[in-house]
Length: 290
Ligand SMILES: Nc1ncnc2c1ncn2[C@@H]1O[C@H](COP(=O)(O)OP(=O)(O)OP(=O)(O)O)[C@@H](O)[C@H]1O
Ligand SMILES: [Mg+2]
Image (cartoon, rainbow, N blue to C red; front, top):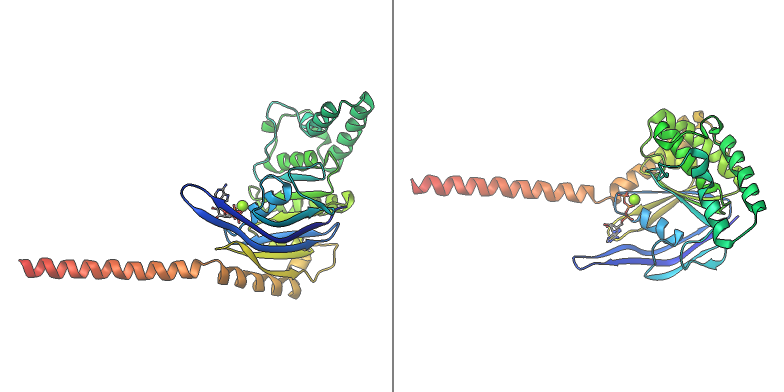
């Protein structure tokens, strides 16, 4: 199990057209085995933070450590799952799952026992994720929920201590999501993973998270961190509990307050007033010219 530590992390994107502070002064300590969810308005830096922890992007300043080791790039201790499954369409389910492990074995020039071990691991994951029946199918023959289960199994294949998930259930329907929620909680506890899970769905964030980290935009930053006051073993009825509903409304209110949407609507209202005024002035000028 791995800890994640972000201390005063900043990320600035400098392009020829813009200078964007995607993250400013982000400090977050995540315990080994913890399930942390990230929510917040679009553009507040959720994906950026995940990519920095994954080592897919470089932070501008600050320090990021996983398992006490400074992040300098991608590593076998971390795996990432995206919304769009990103499976290899020309490989069967079982081959998709084994792919990362086979790559690792080839790179390190290991023996056939590694490959055998990988096969055992792949079979265990196929069973765990309920995919045994479709192991020889191709991704295009599977539903979205099944494809995402394959993507998760593939991510777990190399036994990462840290699982990073960017809106993994964003494309799934509500019923499939509910099934996936209980499955991912079960699998991550069983595997002992530390999880950072990005979502737009506040209910999902509370149901899955030990803590919900609420981020705010312009610049991207942590607004507040909310411990979820529910037993760790979740059940659907908890979604109707007073604790759940209270936290839900607190978080939704904070998202509304920090998203900048109100300010944008204000601006829009002012602009439309100006348009109306301009129209009135033009009509008046045209009338006086006649
Ligand atoms: N490669 C990049 N180059 C320039 N700017 C970027 C790049 N990646 C992200 N940004 C900017 O950084 C900010 C944070 O983006 P990010 O994708 O992390 O937000 P997000 O919270 O994941 O949003 P969403 O909820 O819409 O996925 C945005 O303003 C975005 O435009
Ligand atoms: Mg994103």
